[in-house]
Image (cartoon, rainbow, N blue to C red; front, side, top):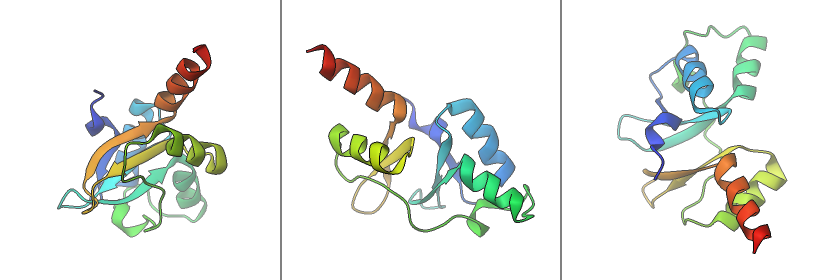
Length: 121
């Protein structure tokens, strides 16, 4: 099982912190958690670019720029994850429980691996 911690940042962390995590996890985005460890959003490289274009300081906390709408799944379903990726071009999908606590993540790499395996059958 992958370590989901490498895909997460706290909403109190800065945009710059998120950039560092994004660079290390290779998924082009991060899952943003609040102090109760609930998922409050996903912050992407596109969000970084929009923040810079809007002259938002990279030292601003994520909670000031995170948008409350994001794609997620409540059940581990790789086919549904694939549909999100195909339709919306996203690269990281949080898997949450009914309280929006993070259980796992689907990365683009998970989906590509699954699709390669499915084709090989």
